[in-house]
Length: 118
Length: 115
Image 1 (cartoon, chains in turn purple, blue):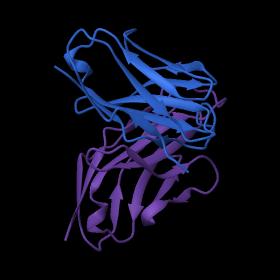
Image 2 (cartoon, rainbow over the protein chains, first blue to last red):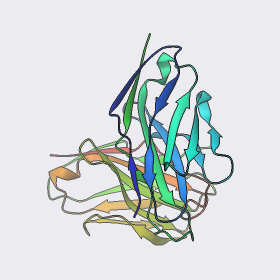
Image 3 (cartoon, each protein chain N blue to C red):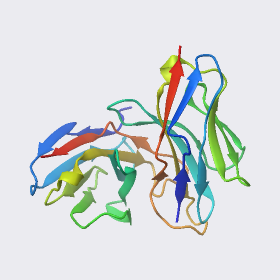
Image 4 (cartoon, chains in turn red, brown):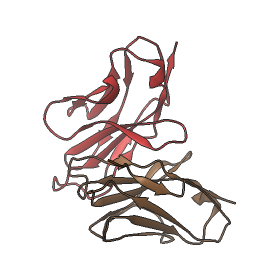
């Protein structure tokens, strides 16, 4: 079975400061990990993914995430926040095919509201 | 390159009716997944289709069904609608089944309201 936890419902950051949105996961096999962002009344926009390779993944709009296998975490980060980053952020996971896990679709966390204050 | 297209964008139905939602994936993508998003339950996986076959299914009742056509377009159907089916239904496409590391591109969704 696969699961994702986003422990913070809301994160408040001042514009220009670094931001972190936390995510921990659980899978049976190896993880495929994703971050998506959602603006009001819109679908999900892809930010970045970890499949294999370097633990530090760089994505769209200056975001990056670090895969930490021992802590089963995949926190989203950005060095300098913009007001336009304010949105709902989702972490998602699925078992990599043929890695010993199931064949489910993406499992999403509950989402974290990121609020960037001017 | 056109993105994932979902139609209609908004829909209002009455309890007991049935509804069909449509999703056209990115050209060349062969996998289509469906998700339900509600304030209470968040984003939940409904099913995934690849090459016209349902590959995976989430924990939803049999009233929720889907299919995929030879051109990879997909439809999902909900029969005997309940108030709790009110949600944003999102479709996602991927080049191959089970993600295979290529990730998923989501459409803007269909907002279904059941009254």
